[in-house]
Length: 117
Image (cartoon, rainbow, N blue to C red; front, top):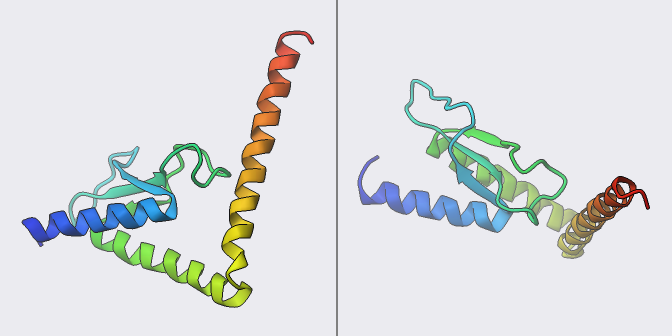
């Protein structure tokens, strides 16, 4: 695939990644395969997927492989919604915020210790 269809596919993948809390990026290791260039996926910002390191690469592969991988992530989220109900998204967001809050408390405590308070 080449040309404008590839551009549209990449834009669609970027939108899907954004909705799931990811961002597309260049692989840290510059890894490439027989199939050509690859793309990596990591958390998009400090608020997305807070339990993971900001430079953690969840996926490395081709554009087509990324599309299939994202389909799997969406399937898993949809399955959780069907199994646990709509409140599951709210619970996930609450747990992520709890994690952010705990990390902030840890930072503040470390600063107090460093300042001798």
